[in-house]
Length: 85
Image (cartoon, rainbow, N blue to C red; front, side, top):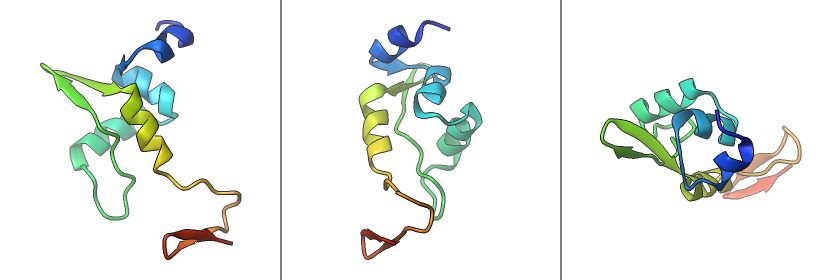
């Protein structure tokens, strides 16, 4: 695998690079692509197909990561669109 600096400077990432970039397994990426966005499941990050190859755009991954709520502790719950302790 290329160095991390090279990977994170790229606009388009492979599945393996994406897995490392978002801190999720390749299995998660594959399952998410296959099942799509289902109720009570973590939504799949957006991906593109180039021929038979699956690729992820870094800016899409950043947007995808930003959609998740940041928690200060595990007892926070989301109520009416806002996080409360």
